Structure formats: C-alpha cells, structure tokens
Image (cartoon, rainbow, N blue to C red; front, side, top):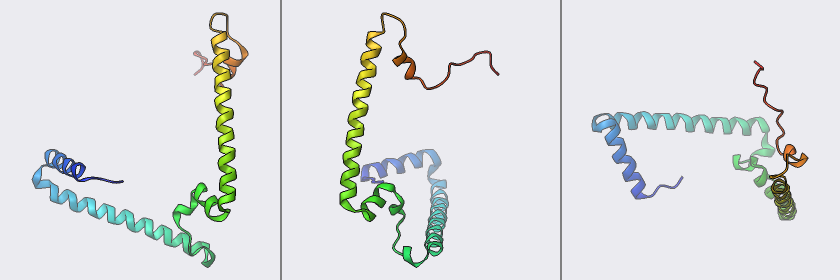
Length: 131
C-alpha cells in the first residue's frame, strides 16, 4: 500500500481522537509487536517451504506461485502471448453471448418466459415449504 503524507497525518489525527494521547504510545508498541510477530511467522513459513522443497527450488519466490507469474517465468513470453490471445477470444465470446441473452430477453418481455431466460438461472426454484 502506498500512503502519502496527508493520509498519514489524517490517520494520526484520527488515532489521537479515538484513543487519546495517553494510550497512543502503548497502542503503537502493541501494534509493532504484532506486526513483528506476523512478519516472523511469514518468514519462518517461507524458509520451511524452501527447506521442504529442496535445493532445486532455492530461488523460489512466493510471487512465483501466482499462476500468471509462473507461466511467464517458466513457459516464456510465447506461452504468455498465446494465453492472452485465448483470453481475448473468451472475452469476445462472452460479450457476444451476453448480447444474445439480452436480445432474447428483450424479445420475451411482452410474451412469456423463454428457454433462454430460464437457462440464465442455474439454481433450482426455491421451495418455501422446505425446511
């Protein structure tokens, strides 16, 4: 997260108003302890993960576990370009399907329900008498 000076000042003013100047130093110490504890747990978990995976994964970063980053790093830019092209085609197909469903819904507004409108709701009808 990126804070600028005005946001930090606003947070300090709110903290002084909410907690008072007497409790603020104690609250800051407790917050620092909690952050230090959480950071230590995260570093220990990352170290254990590297230890369990072995030396061939010594350069593993947690950001590499993101599927997009993994593909970009291990399969190269060609695979990334291919996947982006497929994603674009899927977006286009979804847009055309959404348009077709909207057009079918507009045509059935005056008449009754159609099968296309019923297909939009994958959930079964709600039974009010069921427990």
